[in-house]
Length: 399
Image (cartoon, rainbow, N blue to C red; front, side, top):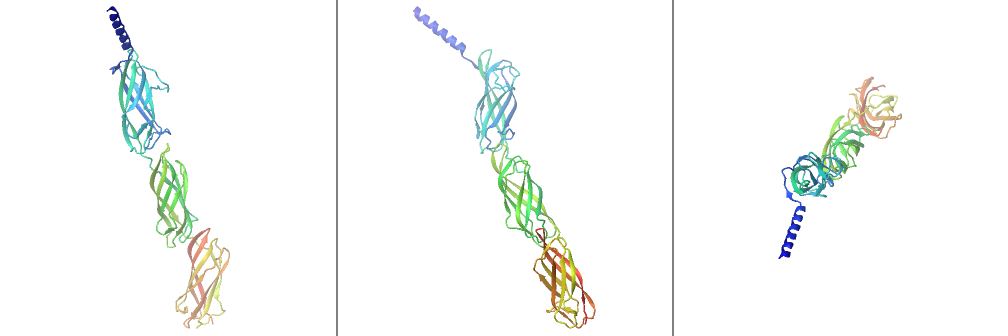
């Protein structure tokens, strides 16, 4: 019997010793934490975290406001939203010196650090989750926990923010220019890099292009690129002035942390059509091809020789001579027309012959002044243009 009592006492003693060594889980009124700040940044260190961001950094700063010293402080994320994938769900306590803090005293600032992947299916907006902080009270060896709740923001993808810095036609375009290139210098002022895409350019009426779609080059944020739309023609009837065009941008963009997404933007630009330049010609000689132009002649010919004193090359000339009332063409028109189709280079001579002019008996032996109009299609430094030159031509009637 005495042995049995001894065994019972030994068992009770062992049980008491084990109980004294086991931590007691408590929720002490002397233990509390205050949420001070939440830092949620992408892997590049920017404050915007997007759908599809990987390795996003989450830091939660808390102030220990309890009155007892505690140790072995750690915190685990709970109620994590769908689409948020923590690479570490729990974190030890770190002090502001970025070292692990074993003993935490009242007034100490701590932070807990996590890395998360965000699914592309997560919609932009605010999301809340919980933080379960566990600790051990050093004076009693009691274990407790404390709950905090916080919110993080998933950002919208950055909008495209291209701006047109300059735009011009080269070579310089005039009414009638057939092949010019529109150069558009754009700058990426947005918060994402443009990887690729296409731009569809809508030109104003009177501008003709074989194709209005061009590929976008890579345009990193803060940099510029030149877009080129080639083989643009300007109709001859276009008036000189400033014309508006539109660009539809469809781009594949990349955020600061490498998330790719599609985005669009519409740009408005302006381009100038210049007035056609004048052309410098010199009349070398003019007059009837025969020494005399007698009355009642049916096939008189009036010849004008000119020199191209301009820098432009003359492609062709349509010359129109308005005849006096006592003259006409063979078809009884008061105008005669001559067309020159051979190019005339700068400094060269060219000849205009108005033939088959009828001189009626009503004509007096006199000098008649007639209007000569030259409709010229020329080329200056690769830009075609139309221009008109007029003269008053003396037509002398003699016997």
